[in-house]
Structure formats: C-alpha cells, structure tokens
Picture 1 (cartoon, rainbow, N blue to C red):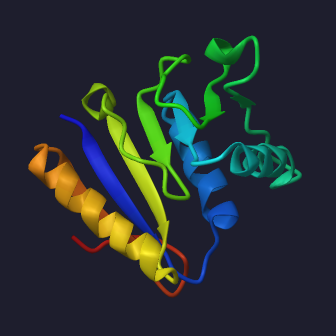
Picture 2 (tube, rainbow, N blue to C red; picture 1 turned 90 degrees about the horizontal axis):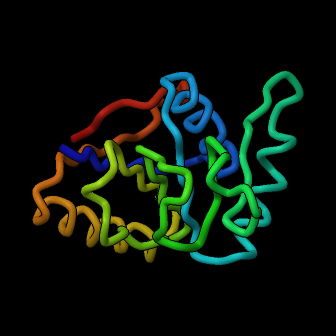
Length: 150
C-alpha cells in the first residue's frame, strides 16, 4: 500500500530539508522523483542539490536530460516516472499524481508558515485518505528531528 507522508516545514526551508530526505531515500536503495510546480523551481533545486554540502554528493538530473531514466533522483514538473522511482516528493504545491498508487511512498512537503500551502496540504490529506492511502503527518521538534504527529 502506498504511504503518503506530509512534512510540515516550520522554521525550516525546503532547501534545508529536502536534501537530507533525498539522501535517506538513496541510502535505502530507493529511486526518487521530485515534482515541483514550475521549471524555475526545478532549476533552483537542481543548482542547490549540487552544492548543499561539501562532503556529500546527491546524484540527480532533471526531466529535460537526455538520460533522465538513468538518474537515481529526478527533478520534474511532470507526472511521468521515467527513472522508475518508488518514491515521489511533491514540493511547492505540485499536485498528487494520478498514478500515486504506483509508488511505495509519496512525500508532500509544505510550508507551514504559508496559509495557502497549509490549506492545500489539508485538501491533499483528505484526497489521500479518501483514496485509501496510509497517511501520516510529520513535524520537526525543537532539535530539528522529525516526529510523527498523526
């Protein structure tokens, strides 16, 4: 069954949180698709993942690459899954894909400081529950460790 995880970003930016979650996914042997809502956001994330830490490399590419299917982490604005990922991250308001049930895990990260993003996450929560997915809600504690809240 597909798990849908909601990560409430509060006091942390997407750029601070996403790379470590991607790294944990790779450590588990998972291929990943990260879907954003615009090409501009994909370009920003692409640049950031190359430089987020000096001691770690996150192998990734974008959907525009000719070898997109080869990347363990693929950044896209589309619903396709060219790299055969088992995990899909949805960021910056990207919608739940019609093929969400084909993933082992869907991770929705949302800005808890943005009322519109919170409202969108609530709607997606309801959609995921109605679709029969296993849904969990995560929030970082004061030390930045993710704690399951629901």
